[in-house]
Structures are given as structure tokens and as C-alpha cells.
Image (cartoon, rainbow, N blue to C red; front, side):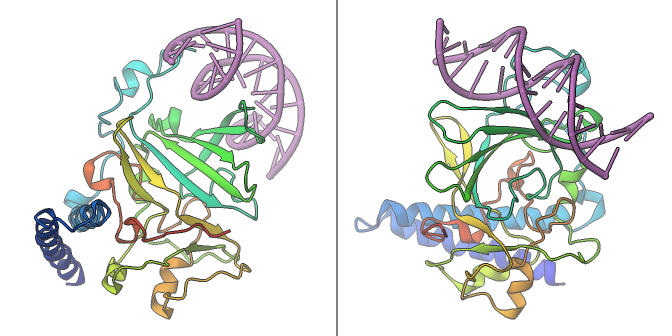
Length: 290
DNA sequence: AGTATTTGACCCCC
DNA sequence: GGGGGTCAAATACT
């Protein structure tokens, strides 16, 4: 089974990386960046292994939408029905994603989830207003994921997306699945700057890749993604040179709402979902495509 | 008619 | 008190 092989591969790689990290920890010449890179790769390997386990069989695979979300103070059916204007305590995890949107992708659907806009504010010092989105299924399934969309001042083609909370709706659990059917309309490509690609085997992950990488913000106890991945229109000139015919299928991402195979992993709850994928190490995507 | 978006008001936190 | 996040009525869209 390919899944088993990949699982073994990831676990083995995790072990190897751990050994490397140990060597670096004992080495006075090792840089902090290198160690951090190894840490992230280790985490990535184990994340992937966990994901493979998680999705390898129906008995254990499907997380239930009603499964508790640790950072919410109380369950939906107790708290959420008491609608109040009181500011809710937000989850402690925030994901920052920077995407380059030149074709209006900054709407509610480009990341594989279905969002509903619930507000817009002019932010002090910001040229462009900030838009607030919540999961479409908030009231149906008690999914309290939200995101903030802010167009960059410096480069209006850059859309900064901040995710708050994680999806507990059923949509979250199917994000990892491949598209149910081929999309007919032209899809924008998801391009990744891979200037500092570490190793080719990092591309071996069979079913998914991140929209952006995650880093842990210790100050705020938050997970933050690093601004590394851009959306480009299909006609865009940029195309990562490493993409092979095989991998381009993975990277040619459908960014419409329901069948993006890639933009997922994401923001769901448990540790296994904090996937810092292989290409997310420091320097892995070292610059943003403009 | 049902759903999504807009937008002014409200409220909390710093 | 001001800024930012959310609510909800009004409006637009399908």
C-alpha cells in the first residue's frame, strides 16, 4: 500500500531528521535557523504521518464535526444560542496567509472553505478596508472559524488573510479529500516560490500541500503562517521550475470553494492538523512572488 | 423567497 | 476614548 509506505517513509524521515537535529544541537557551528528548519521538518513528517493515519480508514478517519474544539470555551449548543454582542473570546490560534490575488480571489471562497462576509471596517493606517468573514456553517454546524481579509497597502495585489479559529463544520473534514469531480472552468494556479527547495522527497506527500506554512507565535500563543504562497492567475508568468508534470497536477490548484484538494489541512483542531508541510521550512519559500 | 452582502451601530479591550 | 470586531437591519442578488 502506498499509504503504508508513505507512513513508514515519513516516520523514518522524522527519525532521521531527529538524529540530524541532535547533531546540530551538539554542534557549536550549527545555526539557530538550521535547527529551526529541522524542527519544522520533523514536525512536518510527523504531522503527515498522523494525517495518513487519520485518513487511512473510515473507522478512524473522519473527524466528526461536533468534535470539541479545545480553544472554545463552551460548546455551541450551550453558548452560541445566546447571541450577544459581547466580543467572543477568540481561539488562540491565528493563521496568517498572504496570497497574491490579481483576479479577485480574495472573496470568500478561495481557500477551500465557504465563507460569509459579516463585516467590513476601515482600519486606522490602512489604505484598504478589512473584511470579516465567518464560516457559512456557523449557525448550522456551530463552526466558529473566521477570517480577516486585508489588502496590502504596499502591494494591492497582495491579500493578507488571517484565520481565526478552526473549522469544525463538515467541510473541514472533507478538505483533504481529492476533488469529487473535475472542475470544468479554468482554474487559477497556485504557485509556490521554491527558491530554496530543500529536497525532492519533500514532494512525496501524496494528497495535499499547504496554502502556507505555519509557525508558532510564542508571544501570542498562536500559530501563524508565513507569507509564502501566492495565488496567480493561470495566465501568470510565474511557474515554479521544479514542478514536474506529475506534481503540477497537485499544484494546479482549484481555488473554488468546495473541491480544492489542497488548501485544507489547515485549521482544524487537533495537533495532527497543524501541518507544517515539507515545503514550509525557513527559507523554503524565501521570497514572495509579486 | 431565500441567501448573501453592505453598512451603521454596538460593544469590548487596551 | 478610540480602535477593532461583531451584530443585525437593510439592501442586493439569484
